[in-house]
Structures are given as structure tokens and as C-alpha cells.
Length: 114
Image (tube, rainbow, N blue to C red; front, side, top):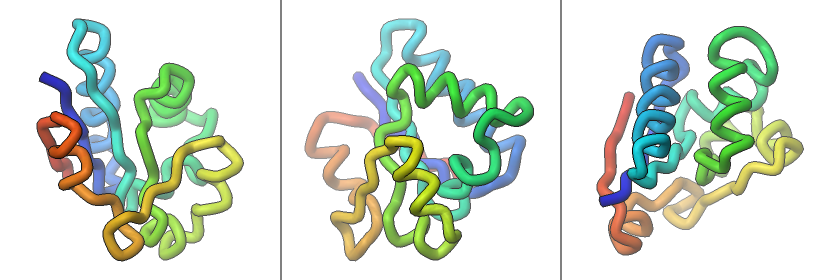
């Protein structure tokens, strides 16, 4: 099985767990991808190279564990340009948001962390 982990908020404790889960799964042979939605789209803007979240973010980015960033939410959080500069894939196939169905159709189980 493979998993798509949708992270929706910018609570640091929640973010730490999302990054830990995506790492744990991938390091143990289970494909997992992180999707930044809602307030979590601020991660590339606020945490790049700073603190614990920054270290986890950089690792996930380097290992291609971040699959996409929501276009509509990154516009709303004023972080679209940061995600683009970081080279992250921007998705908006559901009225500007990321489609969960697109992941289900590709065989992913979906975890939502909000």
C-alpha cells in the first residue's frame, strides 16, 4: 500500500508528526507522499532552513516526499511564490485545490491531518 498524507494546518506539533510519518513510512519501504493544504502551505515560506520544522521540511523536499502544494491555499496564505521558488509541484485540479480522488485513483490510501 502507499499513502498520501494531507497536512492542513500550521500547528508545529501536527507538522512534526506529518513529517515523521512520511519519513517512517518511506524509510520502511512504504511509499508515502505529503500534500501541503490549508495553512500548511506556509511551510516553504516560514520554515525553510530554520528550526526543527525547517530540517524536516528540507529532508522531505530533498527526498521528494512532498508531492504537491495546494494552489488556492498557497495563494490565500501568500506563499505561492515561495513554493514555486522551492521547486515544489503546485496542484489545483479541484477548483484550485488538490483532488483527493486523484490520489485514490492512483492507488494511494489517504490520511488527513488537520
